[in-house]
Amino acid sequence: MQDFDRLLEIMARLRAPGGCPWDREQDHRSIRKYVIEEAYEVAEAIDHGDPAELCTELGDLLLQVVFHAQMASEHGAFDAADVCRAICDKMERRHPHVFGEVLVSGSGEVLRNWERIKAHERGPGASAIDGVPRALPSLQRAERVSEKAARVGFDWPDREAVLAKVDEERAEVADALASGDAAAIEHEIGDLLLAVANLARKSDVEPEAALSAAVDRFERRFRHAESGARGSGTDLGALDAAALDRLWQSAKAATRDEAPEGRGAARPGARRSRPPER
Image (tube, rainbow, N blue to C red; front, side):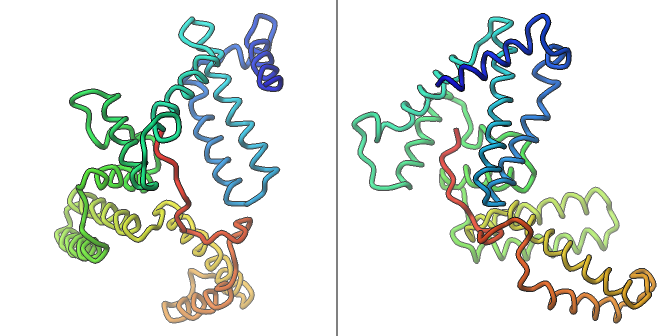
């Protein structure tokens, strides 16, 4: 733990009189965005499959935890030791099959026990879908909320039932578009996206990752089509629909076997194992 103690000492010095002017000016809200940014950089490092990059980005994320703990300690709220103690207590409490006498048959029962323990901690009146941050990307939030609801039995029976719901929502989008009602169009497109997020969940696909991979594919194909148009001395905007389609089909054929840069061997959109929500 010597290096962790060194990090705490560095942050305390940066915040102390005579330390770094920028660090001393910050508060919890002013650096909130950096926690989110660093978490995304950790996720990107995981996608790249580069251990050295992941090590670096985890350090940057840890710095944000230490920064917040140091600021809190200055006001007597809590310190880094309290943060560590709280998560240690929580992990032991929520793993009675490891640190207690509870027996489980597999990971499914672990998750059910986890949700029961969390519900008990929250007390009466708590919702089964509590604990999903509103700051999450909307597709990821849709997946997490529906996943929590499914754990207490509020779910479609199978993937085919969700696919039927997607068809139903698509038809309602078409009706809204025909009406020209902007509010109705937004409402129905939102319902369609939520249904698609549930279809992804029931298909064991992370919707956020699937959409990210789709955007990657679009970017690669668009750039290829754009380059093809330039090579023939034409601007994309000057081409008719048939010419654009030919360029797009050529771009799809040329990029079909290309993996997104830095993604390694991981299949884009594939669900990775996820621990229970803390």
